[in-house]
Amino acid sequence: MPHTRTPVVDGWFAGEGDGFRLLGTRCSSCATVFFPREDVHCRNPHCDGGSLEEVPLSRSGRVWSYTDSRYRPPSPYVSDRELPWEPYALIAVELEAERIVVLGQAAPGVTVADLTVGMEVEVVPGVLHEDAETAWTTWHWRPTGVRA
Amino acid sequence: MDVAVLGAGMHPWGKWGRSFVEYGTAAARAALADAGVDWREVGSVVGADTVRGGYPGYVAGATFAKALGWQGARVASVYAACASGAQAIATARAQILAGLADAVLVVGADAAPKGFFRPAGGDRPDDPDWLRFRVLGASNPAYFGLYARRRMAVHGDTPEDFALVKVKNAAMGALNPYARYRKRVTAEEVAASAVVADPLRLLDICATSDGGAALVLSSMEFAHRRGVTRPVRIRAVSTVTPRFPNTVLDLPDIATDSAVAVGAPDETFRASIARAAYEEAGAGPGDLSLAEVYDLSTALELQWYEDLGLCGEGEGAKLLREGATAPGGRIPVNASGGLASFGEAVPAQAIAQVCELTWQLRGTAGDRQITGARVGISANQGLFGHGSSVIAVR
Ligand SMILES: [Zn+2]
Image 1 (cartoon, rainbow over the protein chains, first blue to last red):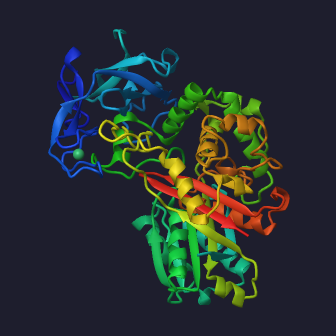
Image 2: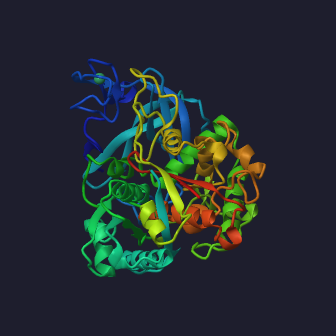
Image 3: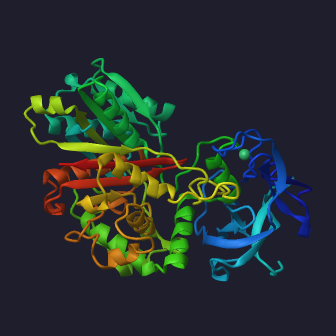
C-alpha cells in the first residue's frame, strides 16, 4: 500500500470529501479567474493588473462536452503496461460563476453512456495512479448525487 | 500586395521511414523545377520546423539550404505547430513585399512518429502540453472527440454526418498521387472502424504521416520578367492569435479563459482566422471557388464550414448533405482529399494546402480539377493559439 498521498500538480486542488475544491486565482483588479492558476500577471489585456489571490472554484458545473480514451495514452501519462487498458471518460465542465470550462477525468466507473451535455457534475477527489510509495492524487468529475 | 506562386512541389505523403530532410529536399527540387527557377537564384529560404530530429528539425531552413547546396541565401525558420507552414509563407511574403528578396523558397517536411503525437520528454509541469498528457492522458483525438460530441449536442450532427466527410474526402484522395490513402471509403467502413475517442472512430481521425511540401514565391515583377504573365497570386495570409477571453477549449489547454470579467468575443478564434484573411484579400465567402481546411477529424471539417462562413452556425452538416462541398457543388472543400487522405505531416501541411490551391487555380489538378477555380482559401489552426489561413487567386 502506498503510504503518502501527493497531488499530481501542486496547488491545483485541496480539501477532503465534500470540502474538496479546485483552486484557481482571481485578479483583485478585474476579478478574472484563472485555472490553471496564474500567480504572476493577470492575462486580461484590458486590465492594468492586480494581485492574484487563490480562490476555490465552484464545486459543481454542467457538462460542456465529454469523450473517452479507448487507447492507452502515451507517456508522460502513467499506466501499468502489464494490465489491459481500461478506458476512462474525460469531461469538460462549464462552471457558471467563473464562466470557465475545465477538463478532467470522470470518476472511476463513470462512462460516456452515463453522461449527457448539460447534466450537472461535481468535483471529487481522485487518484490518478499509484506506485509503491505514493498515491498520486487528482480531481475527478462525477454526476451530482452519484456516490462511488 | 500580391506575391506570385511560381512553383509548387510535394513529396508523396506516407510512412516511408526516411529523414524529413529527404522529403523536404525532394519537395523543394520539385517546386524549383515547377517554377523554372535555378536554386542559385533564390534569395531567401524559409523553413517550417519539425520538432523531430533535434534542434527543431536541425533548424529547418538551413538544413534544406545545405541539402540543396549552400549558395548564400538568407535564411529564416519558423515553428507554429500545425500553422508553421502558413507562418513560413507569411515570412516569405513579407520579405518579398519589403524588397528583401525577389524569389523565396518555402519548405516544410516531417517524419512522423508511430501512434499518438506526444510531448517532448522530461518532467515539465510548466508546459500545458506536458500537463494534459500527465494529468489527463488527453491525446489529440480526445479533444477532437469533445468537439464532435459538442456539435452533436448543440447542432444535432450525427456520426453518420461525420462519416460522410470521410467518404467525400477519401473519394478525392483516391485521385491524388501525393495522398497517402488512395482508396475510396464507405460510410459502413467508417461505422465499422474502432472507436478511438467517443463519438469518433479510427476513420474519423487523421493519421500522422511523413511528407514534404514546398513553394517558390516571388515578386510580381520577378514573375513578369520570367514571362509568367498570369501567375497564381497569394492575396492574404492570416496568422492571427485569439482574443481574450478564448472561451472554446483549445488544444492543449486544460481549461478555457474565464469570461467573468470580459465577455466572450462576438466570434470564435477559428472564425477570426478566416475573417482576417477575407479582410486582407477584400473578399468574402461568396467569392470562393474552393477551400482546403484542416480536417484533423471529420467533425472538425464541418466546424470549418461554419467558421469560414460557407454556411451559418450549425448548418455544416446540412451543407455537406446537400453536396455543396463535394466536387461539382457550390464550394468544394478538400479537393486534395484533405488530412483524411494525407494524414498530418505538421510543418508541411499548411504548405501542401497552398500547393493544392495553386494547382487548382492553374487548372492543372488533373482528375481532381474544380472547374473554373478562381479563388481559393486554406485554413488551419496550430497548437497554442496559431491562426493560419491563405487566400490565393488567379
Ligand atoms: Zn485583471
